[in-house]
Length: 186
Image 1 (spheres, helix red, strand yellow):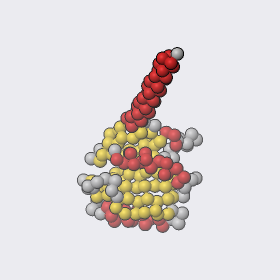
Image 2 (image 1 turned 30 degrees about the horizontal axis):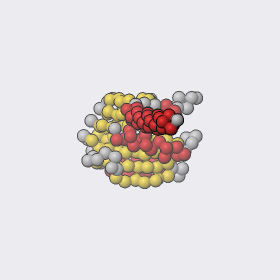
Image 3 (image 1 turned 90 degrees about the vertical axis):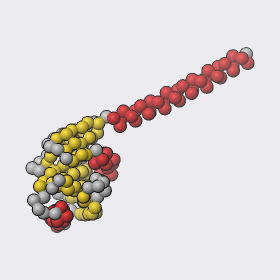
């Protein structure tokens, strides 16, 4: 009798170990899957990698090179995404990026419904001349928060604008940071 209890005890312990290992591997596999479920697009000299549940979108800006949006944020009635990243490119035509940056945000912030969070240098693109503007706008149906990264490259100005509703911006920052770290500008 003691021998069969001992055998059953050993079998139960071995089964628990296998279950624990199986659950551990499942979670690891799940994490690896999420990290690799991305899309890439190369368009107009810009390479971008973004989460699988985002899509290339249409931008209203004439200077837009590429725009992407979170599919979960698309408004059914307007077909517009509330969470998006838009990359614009412009020629500097002799104007400095700093002057263009300052003029742009002087105009944006002259509207009293807009509010600056921070303006200054950016570390989003190491080794590049880059500026960052973080600000709030209240011109649409819901207030939005924006992070704009300005990068000067080969005489051209790139502006990468990350936008989300104010109440959702902090939840989206991990996606914005992932996207920003996977952009290549040519």
